[in-house]
Length: 362
Length: 226
Image 1 (spheres, rainbow over the protein chains, first blue to last red):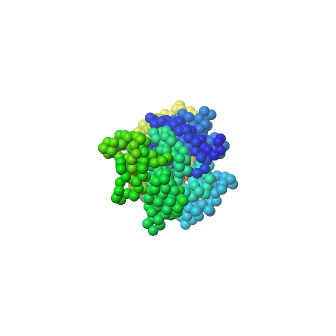
Image 2 (image 1 turned 180 degrees about the horizontal axis):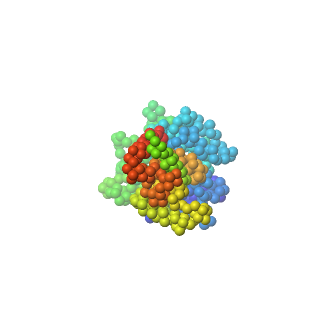
Image 3 (image 1 turned 90 degrees about the horizontal axis):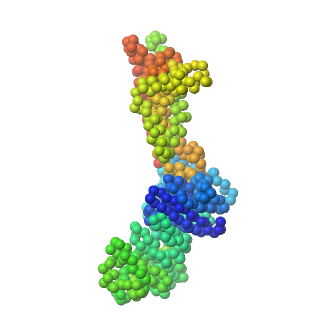
């Protein structure tokens, strides 16, 4: 096995749905699998975890820490309880008849912990569940349940941690509360994590490595920093989004404004907690980008950058997606067919892109 | 009150039959219910239908075929004769076999329903934490199915106590061997001994009511905390 990478290879069929995945992900850090619902993310997770939900496997290969989990040709497919893979489910799946303490010890008590770097008491403290230990899951809030379920998974000392949209069922406040805990898994533990999400903000905040899935296949994969500049992240729910990377030039703390240098253009965004020199990622939704032929004046929109149109794609919903280059990075604008015609937009043309930056991340 | 009215033998025999039948059914019915709750096999509907047959068949039909199967010439009777000199028909053992078959759906169905309610998701969670199917069953499924077991035991026991047709067909009416409560009541009514029939009937009525009452009130306390 190539140390440093985990090879995951599956080919399977479920009724009319065909899944074909052959990826190598880093053996540390968080790999986010990103895609619309129905793209095959859950099927892939079930295959990795060893759950056989009536799916017909045509090819499979997975090894972790020198143990072969799946090898279709050699007829190896380890049962889920023999795989050292822990799972954090979207619906937490805590055992309702057990206290929090019994829940977290369920996996802990049956694994060998001598090799584990995890300390039970540290983890309980870090995830702030000390006061919850004697309570039953029904007495906990959604966020607390998910914290317990993360501790339960981690305490089984897994070789791989799978997190299947762990925040999707929670409200906004709970999601914000939980993200730092997931980041701490990332920063302080060496366990590789496969994190499935369709929320672009989670992807940007958590991902080291990203796998884009669509219709049962892998569209693209790579380090987030490389991938997001070469390819817009597509989601149905939010429309297309893209990321610009830059460095903070000036932080205007009184105005809560940051001036960011991105490909020698200046972008202003609201934000705190950054200082000059910090690298950051700016998330922009394609529908928030407008294009003009001449640089606009007197606009309330702060940002206007000069770009060169690369290609124009008809998205078949009466909208065009215009891909334009800002230096090495890509800006995507979602505009109407009519505007596209009126402005006579075509590849190679230089235009000005105006946008509001909607989110920014470390 | 004279002795004839207070003959305890049928009552004890009925309780013994119901207890043994219930225990046998828990041992046999639990794996059947578990298999039915888990399988996607096409034979599932066949087994489900077979288990449910006693719900729709007249007890006499079942009793008739059991009588044939249990008789020394029948296949169960012949098998039995290898191990024992006695016959199955008109014996207590025969009665237990008949009761087990006749009461099967009352135990299997509530168990199957409660296993299905615990569901795959919690099993997968347990598996992902390293618990094999046996440990998962013992630590997750069983405790979360306690209500199902309570209902299964109550219904199984009560239904065996109330059995009449099958018992009459294969057990006959032998005092202290196969003469259970329902048969004794029938006997008394036939010879117009209404006073005795009343005593047993009222006793059975009160007993059944109390058992169900206890079950339903216990049931609330056993509510799974979700």
